Amino acid sequence: MTYESDFKLDVLKELGNIGAGHATTALSTLLGNKKLTLVVPEAMIVGMQESMSLCGGPESLVGAIYIRVSGGLCGHMALLLPYESVQSLLGYLLGAAPQELRDMELSTLQEVGNIVVTSYLNALAEMTNTQLFPSVPAVAVDMAAAVWSSILAGAEVADYITIVQTGFQTDAEIIDGTIAFIPDEEDLAKLLGALGMGEL
Image (cartoon, rainbow, N blue to C red; front, top):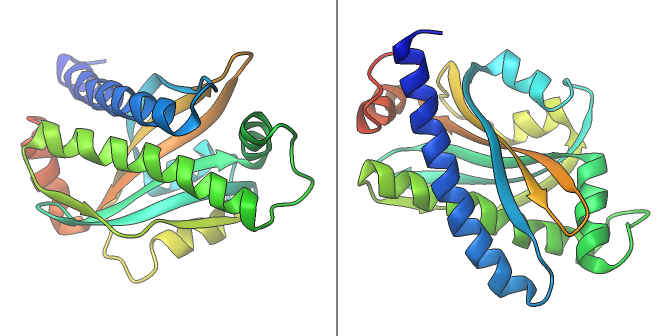
């Protein structure tokens, strides 16, 4: 790996660490006596097709919380969880893994995902010195390909996505997840420049 590649991943790792710090503080306030922290094991820049495989492939069942980002940079941001991780997370928060996802379970998933995604967005705004505004979060549980279609409906997206593979650390386990920021095509260069990363 080149120095330039190392530098880009270091920048993304730092972005992930700041976002994790923000999210952990917010989650602690929301959950009271339940411990739920966000860990950041890996950061990467990948193509659209490769990003799909990180979620288990296009036909894998996932839960997603996603927002549209506007302001100084435009695009989409999402937290994607394999369905097994959705069940583990909700089981930890609600006391038992749900057999099916009803309104309460979806609302809980949406609230936790919203905190994580907006914490990451705030970290991105902090690092780029840019005002960024989230839309109201949406939640979906479906095959990964269908979820990506919902997230990107009508969007002019870049070929590359910034990914932080993360996890929720509970008292007993780490629950896998992936945070993705998908900039609009015209904003990809602006994002890289703001992060001091230059061209891909």
